[in-house]
Image 1 (cartoon, rainbow, N blue to C red):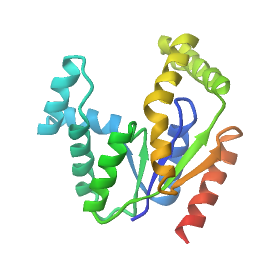
Image 2 (cartoon, rainbow, N blue to C red):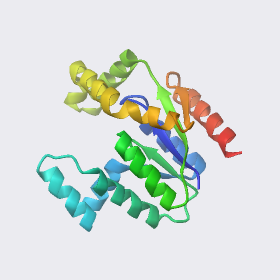
Image 3 (cartoon, rainbow, N blue to C red):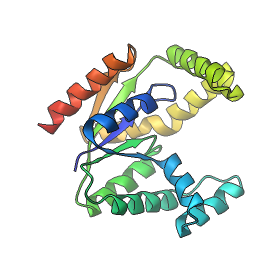
Amino acid sequence: MFNLILFGPPGSGKGTQSDKLVEKYGLIHLSTGNLLRKEIADKTPLGLEAKSFIDKGQLVPDEVVIGMVDSYFDLHKGAPGFLFDGYPRTVAQAAALDNLLELKKTEIELVLFLQVDEDELIKRLVHRGKTSGRSDDTDEQVQRKRQEVYRKETLPVAAFYTRQNKVVNIEGVGTVNEIFESLCEVIDKKRK
């Protein structure tokens, strides 16, 4: 099983590249946001628990999220691997994920870290906001705040995996295909 994390700040192109990587390598895309929505819609015990936190305006606790990830793994036992997108977001989540994967007799092979300058990220996000109709995306100050939260809470995840020699930095500026080719080159080298 080949598991990888596509990592980077908001606006770095994770969603775009995830779709292409899933298609090329046959990986199972694991987005915890999508997972949460499905568990809630299906009214599973974990989904109902998550909904009770969301309804109170609270974050869903890590234990509930990792429980959903565990269930998702069990649903896809024969998968060639998983692509984690937007997860883990904290070092605690990364440690919990590593523990879960160890129980499943697998691990994260690679963390592909899309490197994009903050001004470029803000420009992309504001542009996306104008085309998506999400008014909060068009506010540059909101986007700068999101980048700040990312730096404080999520960026330490890269250091966590760097200590395990799993992080490869990828230039996240260029055409979608240029970036995709860079990602594939690293994946193909690791899979040999």
